[in-house]
Length: 68
Image (tube, rainbow, N blue to C red):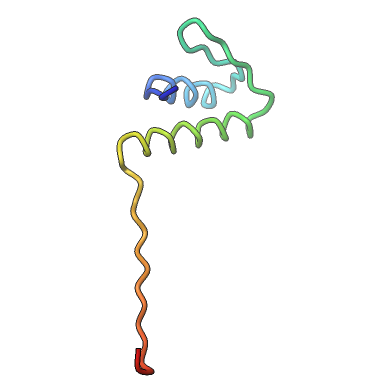
């Protein structure tokens, strides 16, 4: 299931107001702790970044000075 920015906004709003219950359309999720809510926010942010291709690419550069 792809995440939406509306879901991310609802999670952040819940964190800002101190609520642990978040509703997305017809579904409601109650988180046990603030840490769990923050983990959900990180997960949604990472998935949205993957969907948009905003994940930075890694480069590894090697330099040698002994004959390679």
